[in-house]
Length: 202
Image (cartoon, rainbow, N blue to C red; front, side):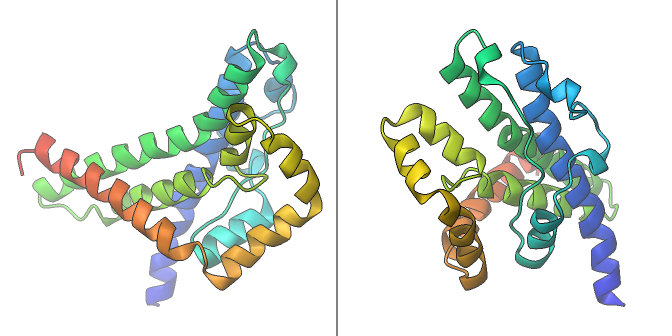
């Protein structure tokens, strides 16, 4: 019963986090002149347009996961490098924005004596998704940023190619990423919480 109750909190938060993340990628790419996300139906707030089965299951099982990548055409940008970096960072940025909104709503609910625990779940899951996607392992967003900023990285990624996803699964399964990600996530959550409490005078 407790598990089902927790799922009622977690699943809607995951759907919102994934949808916001992928919509942000598509929207920024579209605004930079790329028609691909609109043509592929990714400028949508419908979660079904963005869900990746394996990535969603990993998010449920490991607390880390991904959605169906948004197809983009960097050749459409005025500055390919800057455009690619902005589009790659748009997803995690949206997650952090949603997380802070969730934390603000949680602080407001607490200040009014209401149970705002779902907003805390929303904040936590968004921070987790945003931070995880900044890891520089293909196909995560961090790898696309690194490709554009660090010379020679693209060639290294090309060499590891088919080993990238198994490496990612290995990191998830063994928990290698757990401690550094928990440290980063906790730092972000604590910073957001402190800011939210200050806004409400706590």
